[in-house]
Structures are given as structure tokens and as C-alpha cells.
Length: 114
Image (cartoon, rainbow, N blue to C red; front, top):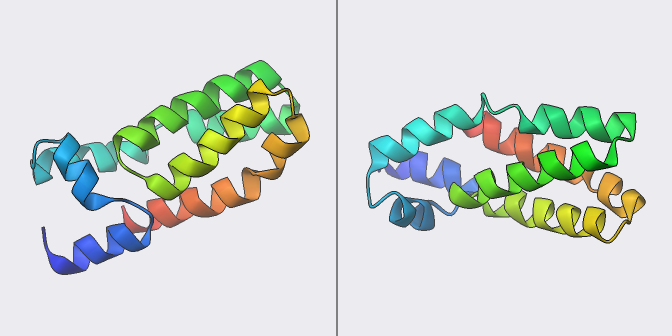
């Protein structure tokens, strides 16, 4: 992988080495999945569900997005979503909703490099 690309992905909170391990060193495959991430609807679903106060839908979207970000080694975003999923499960809606600005910031940071 080009150094500049590696550095951009790393700066956006993606553990490139871990992601490449998961994709058996196949950079083209990793690139393909990273590009698909931008089209994933779960972030929008999460935002909509939180805005509407739909707890179950918010939990489902957050949990699904957590899985996707974990598989792609988007560690910063994954860590935030892990905290949010736990807050939802603990029935702490306020704590979960309060994480949205940080999640949005991390999400947009990832999208900017993809």
C-alpha cells in the first residue's frame, strides 16, 4: 500500500495492518470493502432512529454498524459504537444519544479518506 494512503487511513482511525490481516493481505479486496462502506445505510438509520427516539431501531443500526466497522478495523468508530451499543443495552438512552456527535465526527473522518 502506498505510504500516503496508509497514513490517511491510519489518521482516520483505521488500523490498516489489522484490516489487511483480516483480508489476507489483499489490498484490492480491502479497498473494495472500504468503498462499499460509504454506501452502507446503517449510519443514516442510526441518525434517523436516534432523532425519532426509536430505541430498538437505534440499537439495531448501531450494533450492525459496530460489526461493519469492526470488520474493517475502523477502530475509533468501532470503539464509539461499542460504547453506544452498551449504553442502549443498559437502557441509558441519554448516554447513547450523547455519543452521536462523536460518532458523526469519526464517521465523517473515515468517509473523507475513502
